[in-house]
Length: 419
Image (cartoon, rainbow, N blue to C red; front, side, top):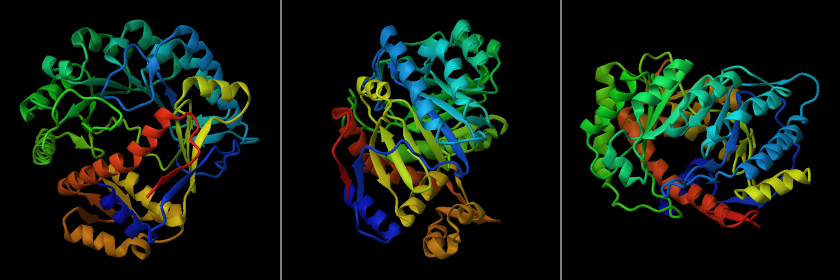
């Protein structure tokens, strides 16, 4: 796996030098003039720990949550004060976790603190565990300004939920509470390519969600991280490919709009994605920050994060300074997640044309039928989206798995080199 990703990275970045992440980082972040910047807040608390989940999470504890809130507000102040005078425009605000709604009563104070420094132009999104979809909690979130929600359903099929160690949920009651709250976007998250799943069971999940008020869904493939646990056999790659093609074909037939590699909208008017941001600032333990030439990731250790913020120090554990070519590759990878690559946007981001930097690669991708050329740019085909997933799986296990695996073990690693 690492050979494939290393060769691809070397070809695209024109260097064999590895990615070197150095420890720590400065609280002075050069984001004043950064365009297309989103905000991310990580809430690490869960009622129970799902063995398959790779994210930074701990069991909910009320006392710890109160301490975490104060640390989070302190980090927002520390980072926000980098911008003097006028507030900085941010495209969006996204709460992930964990189960952010376990701190529903605190979301409003977090949003208000962020609005001291930022103007949020495209709404506020938040991940929800199905058990958090109660009338009271949803109302708290709505009052805090949340306009888009993503429900971690995973599946409506009892046998699949059992496989994942999840309990079945009374989804009719759940959707009743959601519909009463009236969010702009209601997205259902599903996992596919699990043992026993068929296109029929996946279609049933999609239609059940849409029939009960969802207007968007995400269908993510199961990725097997080395530091997580699973109690089932992985599906063969051919089976995953077949399922992905069937999902796409079914959605096209139904008239659902595909707005990213894994997401579809019922009408085309509702979108929800935590992935496609050119740049973003991250707050909370394990949160990442991506700027024009810099990538930073906070410690995964909740206590260490709180302690750092009590000291008035940034909680960054590792920082990577991009070369221009490395940043271009990072941009291409995550921009193609949205299925589109616009030449104008690339040139605006880097001051160089896409054809001058990756003309040969785009011609090759077109010849291989991974992309089609459209006015002003390119769009991934279904074939291209499958190979994007195939490479993403290698990338995840070769890069993200190494980083997160280390971060789960060490609060502040001395160094990380990814070749």
